[in-house]
Structures are given as C-alpha cells and as structure tokens.
Length: 266
Length: 215
Image 1: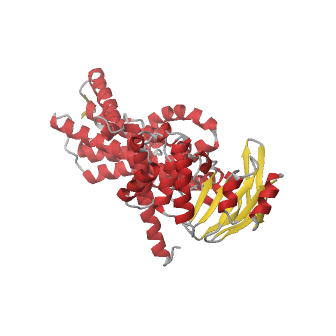
Image 2 (image 1 turned 180 degrees about the vertical axis):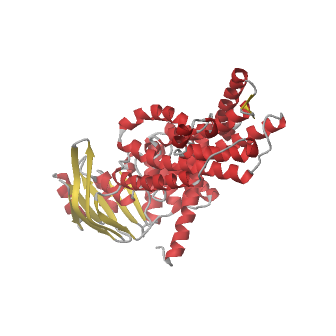
Image 3 (image 1 turned 90 degrees about the horizontal axis):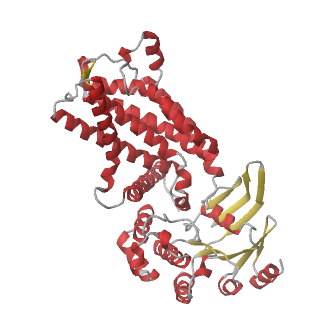
C-alpha cells in the first residue's frame, strides 16, 4: 500500500497528521464557538475580560504603579498566560472520551486531540495578549517591548510547558477518575508558582531560590524582562522550563501510548 | 489482505475482567465477503473494532494490506453536535478527498436534503446509516466493515446499498456482522462464527447459517 523509503513514509505520515490537526481545530472551533456573531474570536474574549477587569480592580486598589511599572500592564501580562495554563488543564481532562467517536478514523491519533486543543488555546492567549498590549500602548499604560525576542521566547517556553502538562493530564484523567477531583485544588495551589503577580526580585532570597524551580516563573520572568527591559530586574534560566517540558512530554507520550491500548471506544 | 494473528482481547473494569477472545487467527483476502455470526455479546462488534483499529488487542498483531473503512455502525465516526455537511467536510479533509465531489455523492445517496444542515445527533439511526454509507462509498475503500447497520435502513436504502455496495463494488472485501441470514446467504462467500471466545471459519455459508441457527 505505502511504498518508498522510510523518509518518504515519515513525510507522508507528517502530512496526514498536519491535515488531521487542521480538521480537528476547525471542528473544535465550530463546536465551541459556532458561526454566529464574532465566532472564533470568542477564544480571546475570556482572557481579555479576565485580565482587563482584574487589572482595573488592582489599579484602584493598589494605585497606578507598583515597583515602577504600570499595575494594569503588569496584571494583564501575568493573567493571560495564567488563563492559558488553566484552560489547557481544563481542556485536557477527558479529552479522549469527549472525542472518542472520532477514533473510528484510524489516521486520527489521540495526541492529535491534545495538540489541536492546545493550539487553539495558545492562539487565543497570544491574540488576547497582542490585542491587550496594542490597546494599552495606545493609552500609554504599556511600554514598547524592550526585547521582543526574549518576550516571544518566554511565551514559547510557557506554552511548551503547558503542553507537556496536557500530555500527562489527558491520559491520567482516563485512568483515574479520582484525579479529576484534585485538579481544581491543584490549579489553585499552582497560582503562586505561576509567577503571575510578582517579580522574583521582590521576594526574599530564600523564596527566590524556591520560586526559580518553577518553570512557569522562569518563563514569566523572561516575558516581563522582554517587555520592561532595564526598568525591572529579572531572574531566569531558560533551561528549567526546557528540561521540565522534555521530561514531562516523555512521560506524557508514554502514558498516552499505554492508555490508547486500553481505551474502550463506544 | 487482512491478517489477524493470535489476537487476544479482554475488557477490565476495576478488578473484573471479561475475556472476549484469545488466540484468534484470521485471514481475509481481497474481495472476500465475510459474514460474522454469533450470539449477542459473542464479540462481533469487538472484532470489527479491532480490525478497524478503533480499539487495540491486548496481544497479537493485525496486519492491514488494504485500505479499510471505519466500522459502519450505530455509533462512532461522526461528531453529533456537527451538521451532516460539517461531518462530510471533516471526513473529506482527513481522508484527503475533494469536498465538492464527496458532498455531491452524499446528497444524491442519502436523499436527506435540508436535514444535512442539522446536527447529526438529531438523526434517526436510519439517517445515520445513510450518511455513513454515503461517505464511505464516496471515499472508496478496499474493504468495508459493516456492523449490523444495514438492518435499520428502509426499502429504498437497502435497494441503494445493494446496487452501490454489492453490485457496483463486488470486487471489494467486506466484513458484515449481521443476524439477517437472508442477506448473508445472498451476499457472503465465507462466514465466521464467534462462540465462547473462539472463531470458526466456514467456506460453506449454508452450513454456517445452519450452525448459527442452532447455537
């Protein structure tokens, strides 16, 4: 059926997966947002509203600046990646069961479900971030990013780490129903380790070393350094999120493979 | 050719375990029409799902050397919340077919008209069967996996199936799970009886039906 060299076969499989993920994303967007009114633009509505309202709230509670940076901008840059993480977690629970009728088609692999959902979430998060930044720059609450490359790298590392968590959560949620009950608590406990509401340099030295073990904090510091440049002091090591993501992704892929073998499809 | 060698499948729930079959061997050649017979719960649908790659065996290997349709049955294959057209578009995309051609065929074959703009979850099982058959016929597979579903169609649908599936595509392989012995007698040239986790292959259809009726 399929002849040719291994490289040819690999390219062919790659093309199939790209097509499948594309189709899954369109399907997901239609089922979640429909074709009415603003349609798929809703994906950025929630992070924007969240970041916007919390930003305004803090603006009145804490004053317009904190440690020399705009409170609204600081909150927004923290909240949008955090909503990405929370959405990713929520979307990966029971991702296989929700899509199981599509497993009838052999070319659809279970990792495609996770990837399609993740891509939608990260596109939504990035669009919201961009939209919010442009708006805040226009009203003078947000600086022109000092180092765009660092900002984007930080975003990428944050995203990749979220994805590696999805790769573990999705199969785990199929194995154990008890795990689902712990997820809300764990995501709440994770908030202080997300780096969303502080800079590491504001912390005591003891807390600093501890927080820098969190991949989220490292990535968040990179994003903020990329935006404010010399206005702030940032501590980060890109290797922390990279190593954690690789380890999590390997564990996740192994779990996915095992779960696929025992998955019962109605 | 499809080769199942030493297949074992069991389902476990908690500490309970149900063995469906073990040590199952099977070869299906190009163009063979195989009837799958067995009582309820004998594992007909499970075998079809394993051959279709929907579920995986606990051990053993399934080699597929021809293109095989997804199992055409009461469940699966479609996203209920999407319309008939959206499902058609989705399937054209993942099977890399031209949407306009497929849509044309689906409209002609299903005769569902405006219903195609409604979510598939609002369809009756007969309507689903029409859509599933239309799509799999339009895509053209070497082997069709059919799980019971021909039964649910009306006369018009059965006539169409007969014409498109059994006459126009009589060079294709088929695996049909059905309790409808007349249909099997008319169209199949080989039968497999699943009973107590074992599969017995019969080349004589009448003999197989005779055995099956006495199970």
